[in-house]
Image (cartoon, rainbow, N blue to C red; front, side):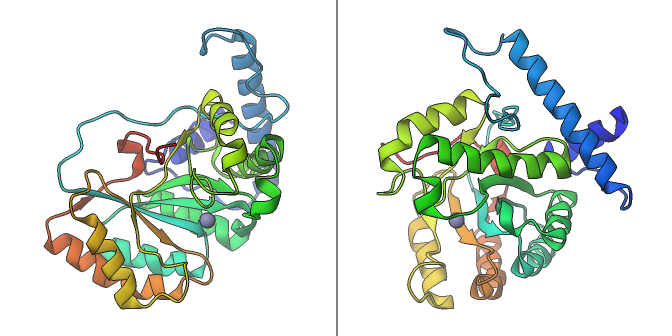
Amino acid sequence: MVALLLANLAAVGLAKGEMRQKGDTAVQSESLLENVLAENTGKEKKGTEWDGDYVSKTEPYPYLYAKNGVVKEEVPEKTVFLTFDDGPSRNTVKILDTLAKYNACATFFLIGENMTEDGVEIARRAVEEGHMLGMHTETHRYEKIYHSVDSFLADYDKLAARFVETFGECPSAFRFPGGSYSSYINPIKTELREELNRRGFVGYDWNVSGEDSVGTPTAASIKKNIFDSLEGQTQPIILLHDSPCSNLTAEVLPDILERLVAEGYTFMTLKHREPYQFPW
Ligand SMILES: [Zn+2]
């Protein structure tokens, strides 16, 4: 069991991990949940990782705890961080095929409700192929998740439990739906960010957007949006989507990668980049 847990921790440690065998999944998942719960509770008892007034890190959201997975390192000058929100979906499969063809890696911010049996297999494939997974939301319903800090944390706890069940722990990287500055999130943003940071999570917005889920995008508009705003950006984080509706993104991705490669860019997952959120 310990070996299995370690294998799964490695998988969500966002490097290549071992695929768990099918079968006996329910029993294994239950044990993983118990183990992680015990581990989190143990950390809480020690209470050594945060200074100042001690506040429970795991209650009342027992799975909402992450090990900070950011690796601080020098990032080569022409590096892009591709990110895809709102998967997994059938479009994620096409996107993974394209990324493999160009030897590129990316970070996927997942929606819990899309982590069906098929969705989970797609997420496992992404990890197997060297990509990174991040937290996006369980439901993606703005009026519900941004109703209060507690509504948001309750939503994220469900998503975290899904990750724990599948990979043994939840990723430390998260992205707020709509980003960290919007009329939806602004009333609760400061407290919410503090709560997530306190629990070990690190946030990532973007500084380049394909605008592929806004209005009526075209292949040309997505490419133009990206390459117009890429210029002059350091450590660009490119926002794209892999939702069930993102057919166009999947179609245009080969063109985008072709040009990024031709312009001398290399690709990294966000694990290698310092956190980035919109200035408040
Ligand atoms: Zn989203």
